[in-house]
Amino acid sequence: MTPSSDPATRRTLVGAGTQVATEVSINFGSSIAGLLIPIVGSVVVVAVRQIITAIAVLPFYRPKRAELTWRRLWPALALGVVLATMNLSFYESIGRLGLGIAATIEFLGPFALALVGSRRLLDVVCAFVVAAGVVLLTGTAGAIDPLGVLLALTAAASWAAYILLTRQVALRLPGLEGLSVASVVATVILLPIALVVVDYSRLDWGVIGLLVAAGLLSSAIPYSLDTFILRRIPPRLYAIITSFGPVVATVFGVIVLGERFTPVQLLGIVVVCAAAAVTIATARPRPRSDLESTAETIP
Image (cartoon, rainbow, N blue to C red; front, top):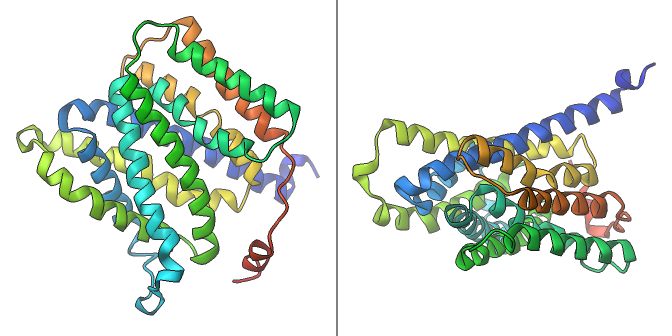
């Protein structure tokens, strides 16, 4: 039996290939959002993104009314607030920094989470390397919008919170029920603001079509596929593939948005991704909690 014909290997290859496709989908959707932000504003783009996600998952993963208790749902409710904050701050930073730089700074969130509690010298070295990469990216090409950097860092912190809350949601709610609740919460937060700030004269069928495409590519499709992917590949491989997201974002920033980077900035992006990948790939497995072990036995 060749390695590619082994069922476990095939499952891993399919999962990894799907994860690569979701990275392309997310960043292509973000590049479309970059085109829309100057037209309708980031609040409208994010609101439509959340509406599309809710429409995609609610019909299939709607919690039962009897199960709508605070103790069970609080992580999903908090996740909705984090989703709204993360996506809005990220898209605002795209408008000020560009997709490639914003995506690289945002990735500092999950990278910092991977370093929490680590005492390895390699992780300390990688942290300094990542810091150097960010300096190369933001400090060597003239004026960088400080508010844009702050917004990207807010998105980074929100992404770290998203990871922690998603873990809680996965243990408390089956399937994509947690995502459906979070999407409704994020929509309730953002939609009233979007309805007030949108310039209706700028809306036409072309813009609406791009808004729907951005929502599908950035949220509905990749979020829905995450469960499929994580059943086929280990979390470490998932994280390694995700660590190259800023490179994918940079490519779409150049192709779709016409962004330009200096060689030093490109080096900074590669350095950040490579250091993060090394940290994640060499991390020791985290001890499993009793709660996680018990959750895996529940059908």
